[in-house]
Image (cartoon, rainbow, N blue to C red; front, side, top):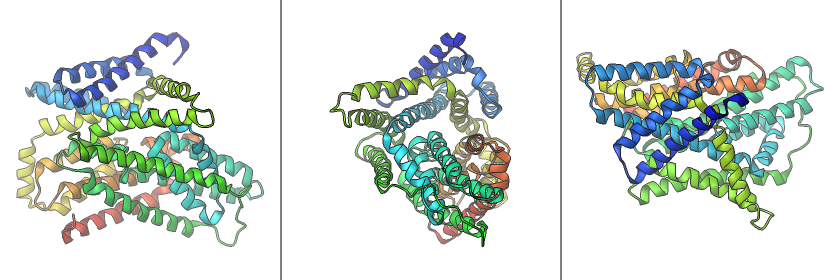
Length: 474
């Protein structure tokens, strides 16, 4: 925003702080009117940051506004709107607080060291290293991790590929980009900090994180293997292969293990707090993420300084995170809209009539899973963010009570398709952002380069889920 917009920027930052404070306060004092106050703060936020909104975010906002009108016309109760706003507040708070985690991680020296180590791997290990890096960086820093790793990969390209002919440079460029973006998409399969997992957990109240996320974590390695196989099959044969400009520094390898430790500690802290207290998974997440972020920032500042810079780095990280709130208006619009839609769609939809229709059509679990998979992938391809589709389908799946279709099976199906379309659709943030970073069109990075991986994962995942349901495993 230009300097003249200092007042709107300040208002926007205050509004998101109010939303975060409301989300945290409601963990201990669930007062309904506070959700409406936070909802009003979100409206003010979007009003003063409207220049940051894009078509991708405006569409769900319009849908949410229209649905509010329909719900009002149908006489939906106040408590339903309060519940919808609670979800919108949670998702908005989570996105903002993950921005704090991203800022704390970016300030830590291990991020740069791990990035150097992964991008300096020799050709035989490069795909797996970058894919793994995209996965871990994405878990900790979300899109910030994607940016850091792609930037380092592009620098490695510039310094280590000058001797290659242009066609081989383009092949190497494509393979490195795909390795990172595919790895980033695997976050949707299991990460407790990921939006895929959390959107399903809040839309399917009977679902538990441990019901499906551990399976998603295991299957992420199979997806990694499938991507590596495609990379090997499409690699040029009988041509000179570029070597890294310099071998990776073994000392930097320790930074990768440190990042893995951060991921493990975050996940264990959330799961433990959820298991040992009466707090829900989402409430535990909202408490752990900011606490861990500030602790990480303080630790970063205290290293090699005897603790003198801990407060300074922590303050700087908090300031940087808050300053970026207005820039996240488009993402916040999508997430807040998803929270509203996941409740109101099911409320205004003739769920009972749909259930009776499903009975009349003798729909069983498998056709419903296939319909859900096609809907999520297809709508993602035309720009409807998966967080909206998955939230609505998750709620609908729970309400329909299709014989043989468990919430776990629905969740497993949806996270797999989410991961597949996440690095395919040119209208989804992952592909659009990656394309802007590497200087290619989103259609090239998603549709042209990645169709075999994304469509393959979607088909294989759906077939595997279907077999698991038939066998009674899900």
